[in-house]
Length: 146
Image 1 (cartoon, rainbow, N blue to C red):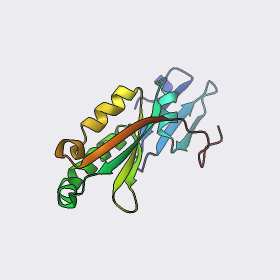
Image 2 (image 1 turned 30 degrees about the vertical axis):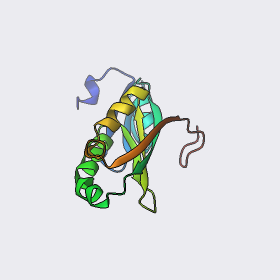
Image 3 (image 1 turned 90 degrees about the vertical axis):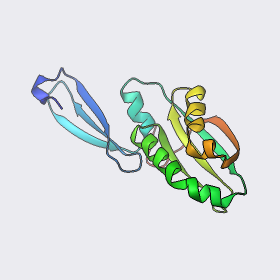
Image 4 (image 1 turned 135 degrees about the vertical axis):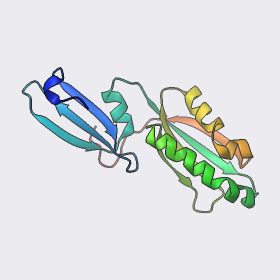
């Protein structure tokens, strides 16, 4: 990162910390004081960078082939980790009865959400029997006041 003395003011930078969707924001205002804040909202980090993102919830039903799902799971989870690191995955996990899962993407368009799902190893291997993607408008969220 450039030295703060070389940065135009006001200056900010956002980066992923590697902890479950946690982002940090460095802010330097015209007074020259630097401050950092943590934000667990990937969507907010994108907005701070001027990017338009939306939240898309994917409801997935698995096939009955548990062996195939177990065999494909490591690649699926590696793929999801890569999306998390890229700021495109908000959260994911299977239903308690393991009949399906929910994946929440934070991307610009429905088409991008569909591309991410199509690139998932579970899709290519035939683990997913059915999937529905819906844009999700989050109104209330723990730890967020706006």
